[in-house]
Image (tube, rainbow, N blue to C red; front, side, top):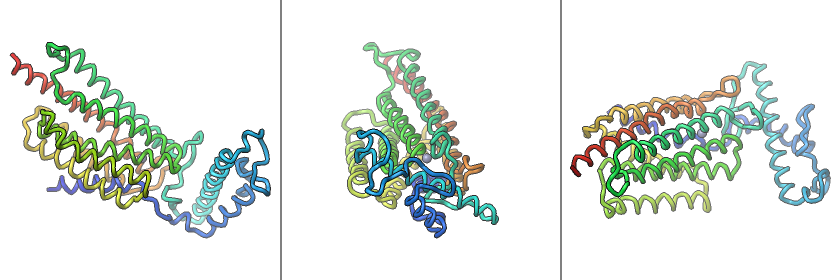
Length: 342
Ligand SMILES: [Zn+2]
């Protein structure tokens, strides 16, 4: 039963990752005073930010006329706010460190150091590596199916889940792309894109888990599984996007969908005679262990390596094993189907 506790922990925390609440850092009155002053004067201590230069009537004071349009102004104000928050945070953290206090979160995030304008450079790098790993996995899967394994007389692969895994590869790469963007710069839009693509991937993975583990091969059965889940996933994304970004509700949905698919995979891994079932176990158990990093959400080491970033690092080898399982499955099914044809 221990494995199920892992699974529940795994999914609950993967969805809890970025729940935004007022954090200890931004409710600190000293921090608030600093922000208020910065937004008025455009300076934190000695440092002043060009984006915070506004004339008294609210229009920008420099740049050609076309750069003084409202859109540009909005962008400037937004950038000013982010510069103020960043430098007030650094100052507060420095003062806290001097009196021996540990780091606290600001606006739901640990105090990260920026690198070339990237907000969380390590998470960006690991998201990009996850993306590369999915691309590598998908590409080698594609080559295996179309060039290495025998083809049917009509030149199509024998493997009857090929199309489904292709879509899975695309959704995974899409999700890691937006994760990298979101960790580069956290604004409303990048956050919504990251959440929606993650939910789309999660919903689709459940469909795939059911279709593969129950060996659903005829169209009618596949549609019966996919239609309600696709409808639900789409409605959920539209709800988050257009109606309300409800973190609590989103978390509950993620937990239920995630537990369902991990249960499906682990039960299947327990009953199947699949030669590569151990790889399924590695991914399910490994994912659970990696989740410990999310449970012990520690602040960034040296301003860069926090628990969330390391968690993104841990999914890189798991992704490799996962695609290796998918490729084994393609070989296994192909040899079975070929025997039937002969
Ligand atoms: Zn992340």
